[in-house]
Image 1 (cartoon, one colour):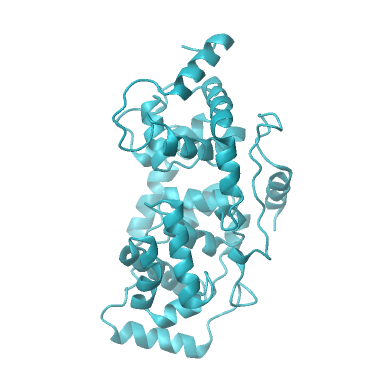
Image 2 (cartoon, helix red, strand yellow):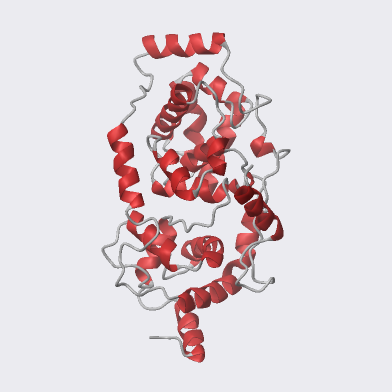
Length: 336
């Protein structure tokens, strides 16, 4: 573990959000090797597949027409990296002023008051992704949480445990094949697509990482190099890679999920025609570093419950949070 990683871990253990007062900071859970989420069926992440497992995988891939082939699409990986790196340190909308630092501070104050307890309750969940210590595990959880609710992701996790005896039983997943994985993921929905994604990632790891499940060397890489490595995996885009950077590598990046994206549009924090990827790049550049972690979870909580900001709402006008933010900014003389 390099110095930067040790420093990040220490910051996590002490609780983050230095700009907010201690009472307002959301305490970031610490990865715990004894936690049931990070238990592994192997003793080390450097354990390689045994010969019997390798032979089984090769045979299954060769004869099973339903198996998911691995395609090393270098052009796609390069395209993802080029798109992300073009705005990795600056907003893609340099003339778009919002959100200002003051707006972010006000939003944090208001949303914390409204949703702090809900966020704290979510972190008390023993399966919170914040406890994941291993890069590949975090990638798989990111896949399970794609395009669905956390409750559905947890149902999929339960299916994996029931089928394989462990959430991260990668040898067994590859050995039993695609159909078994699909059935295991069925309770969480989107099971066919997510089984395909997981199989593809595991086979890509096997092919490119000397048959080892250990990707933790990424932990000590600088942000840009870590992102480049993660984007090399098929089906891992900048959002999922950002999730891994935040959850596992404890890097302070702003992640835009469905709720954050919707609220950013409603609150004029991003141009109306901005894509999810460019919105993430814009907000990562505009939101003060010390507020990124908190605001991500607070905005998710707000997007789930606000009558105006939740998905599918037909209610128009400013929501209660926006009204309070405007009032707070006026008091501080920061509203424009």
